[in-house]
Length: 111
Image (cartoon, rainbow, N blue to C red; front, side, top):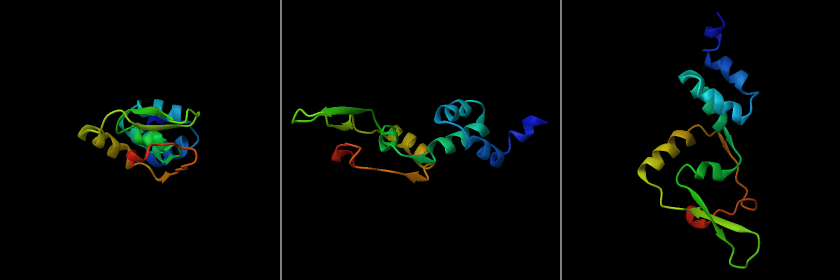
């Protein structure tokens, strides 16, 4: 029966490795087994650190004092305990985190 095959995490990992982030999000809603595999695939490699940091608190844009187009970002509010719980839930799935400080203008107070 095909439904048994689609319950084997190793096979799902192979299948899901060909999918997009949007497809991983959709698959995460199917069932618990699919959710675990899809979320692992979705969070395995994070190339935009803001995606991870936003789990803690909404991020707001701070205009550059010089008026140039470059902006900085900071938290709209300090992270609360439930924000840290959500952050840990997803950050544990990250296997590779890429950060380029030339492309990201996160305010130093975030760190």
